[in-house]
Amino acid sequence: MNTEYDQKISELKKVIDESNRIMEESKQEFLNKSVPFLKDFFMSFAEKVAKADYENTNSLGDTNRLDDFKNQIRDLQSESENMIDKLVDTESVWYGWRKGNHHENGYHDLGSEIELAMAKAMWRIEVVLKRFNYMSPQKGMGSIPSLPSIPPEMDQSLKRFDEAKTDLQRAAEEIPRIQIEIQKKKASDLWDQ
Image 1: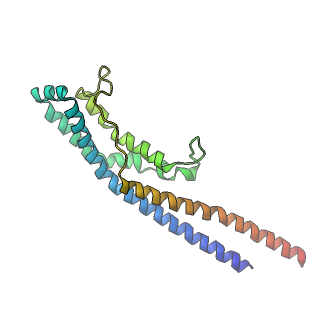
Image 2 (image 1 turned 120 degrees about the vertical axis):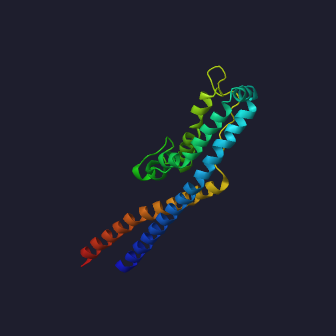
Image 3 (image 1 turned 90 degrees about the horizontal axis):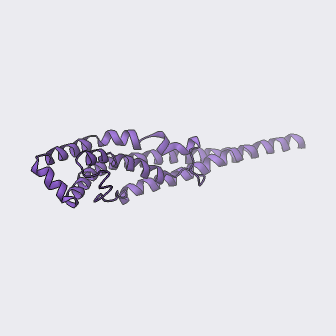
C-alpha cells in the first residue's frame, strides 16, 4: 500500500519539476520578446506623439531640438534591457504567489503584475515627452495615445506560465494530503495489530 502512495508522490514530484521547467522557459520567452517590444514601443510611440502634436514638433524642428528629442528616445531604447531587468524580471512579478503576494481578489494575477511592470517601463518615456513639451500641465495628456497591450505571442508565454503554475500548485497541494493518508494508514495498521 505504501508503494502506491510513494508512486503517487513520485509522479507529483515529476509534475512539479516539469511545471518549474515550463514556467522558467515561458518566463524567458516572454523576457526575450519584451526587450524588442519595448524598443519598438519607444520609437513608434514618440513618432505618434510627434505627428499628432505637429505644432510642437514644428517648433522643435525650427529650433533644431527635434534631433535632441529623437536622441533621447534612442537613449530610452538602449536602456530597454535594463528596464526589463529592473521592472519586469523580478521575483515579485513572476513568483509573488509563492510568497503570498495576493490582490484583493485573493490570488496573485501574473497578467496584472506584468501589465503594471510593462506600463512602468513604457512610461519612462513620460520624462522625455515632458522635457520636450509634448506633455505639460496645460496640455495634460493632450495627443498622447494609450499604451499598447502586449502582443499575442508574449501573452501566450504568460498563459503557458500560468498553466504550469496551476499544475505545480495542484501537485504541491496533493503531496501533503497523500502524506496524511500514509500517516492515517500507518496508525490504522498499528491499531489493528
